[in-house]
Amino acid sequence: MTMDDDLSRIGISLPKNLLDRFDEILNYRGYSSRSEGIRDAIRTYITYYKWMSDVKGEREGVITMVYDHDQRNLLSDITEIEHEYHGIIKASLHSHVTHTRCMEVILVHGEGTHLKNLAEKLMAHKGVESVKLTTIPLEK
Ligand code: NI
Image 1: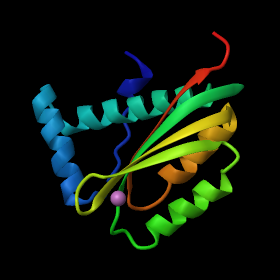
Image 2: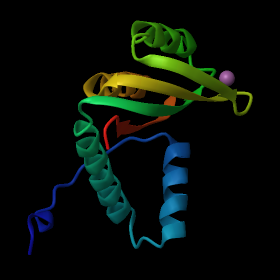
Image 3: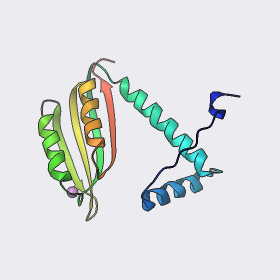
């Protein structure tokens, strides 16, 4: 018996297409229940967040972001954020994936906590599908 057996029940509202995509993955990976999949997703989220918290010191990295081009004000908001963080952004590459989806790869260099702040700021925006930060320390 672990603390995990002390279950809490929650109700969540999700866009249908998000749930459909989630179910598709659960099905593909052979999960027995949606609850098990959600527990796993939350654990992964926590691990990722902890891993992000370890990003410290001078680092070089890449932020990969996918977002909805049609989301109101998103494009100008992203540009504004990128200008705000101009000191750590070395370059960015934009790819128009489909009529409505965009992918942006941002090359960053600077203090790890700043890189993380930038990634989190982008992530918090509505219409941003995913943001992934990958970094390496300067010294091995
Ligand atoms: Ni685009």
